[in-house]
Length: 358
Image 1 (cartoon, rainbow, N blue to C red):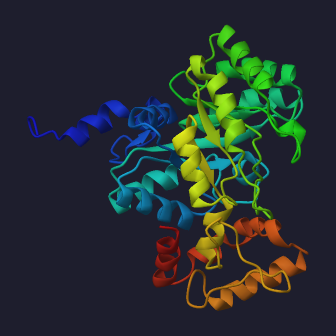
Image 2: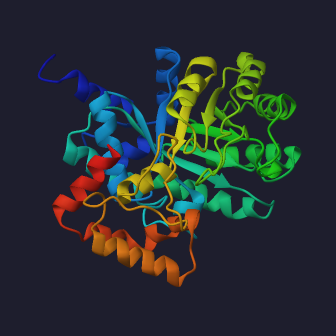
């Protein structure tokens, strides 16, 4: 303590990016650039920060509580499909920072938190025009990190899209890039395509913090136990080592704790996304160590009595899903339809949902 100013107050003053300072001038939330989270994991060594998909306010609350208890930095993220202009969650690119900041102040969260726009998808060249307008708006709204995902396009188009959009991303922000989505579920990323993207970006003075790969993961509910190809991930990370880029692991729901520990110990991964598992846990569904919701003999989710949402609300959610003919992974679309009903439950119910996430 010096002149009545604590070390934490100093960190709040110098550690927050300009957009966060402008939006929340009196806040005590340590919202930082995604770059800081990556560098902290590198300094720690063999460490990964969870990037929790904040599909609901309850999930954000529970994830922040868990990070504080673990004394661990965390990233709170939302993907374009989840929280973009056409989305299935009430939490979105433009309100997530306000929710994170409010919760950090309410809960007394002191660990560093980055806010990440995950999977900002560019699926065709025409998407770039709209992205040039939209990307600045999400940073104006408090984003501190972004993943440009143009990997649905061929490698050259992926590279060119990343180069064209880079001027619209603040230099201080965390930056993730991706290869491999174009190959779908069966095709895996290669060393050559990863090198092509990173060498091409570096040649244009663009230095991403993370690269995400198609390395055997599936977004959503993972039906098999094949999961992440650790050796493939290691070989690509080793080939990229001299470019000082870390790995971002997508689709961790569906992988055991042991496999995730192996990823941490063997590869250069510093960021691991978790989405579906946290959603299912918050609702009160049975989930195994792989992060998969357990199904009954009829292929339906199993609701744990007196955990998560109330039994009455769960029945409403199931009935709504049935009316839309939603099954399995499509239950994610319940987030938008039921966010306000979930927030309208009694405090003890909301608290048990958040505690289950924690």
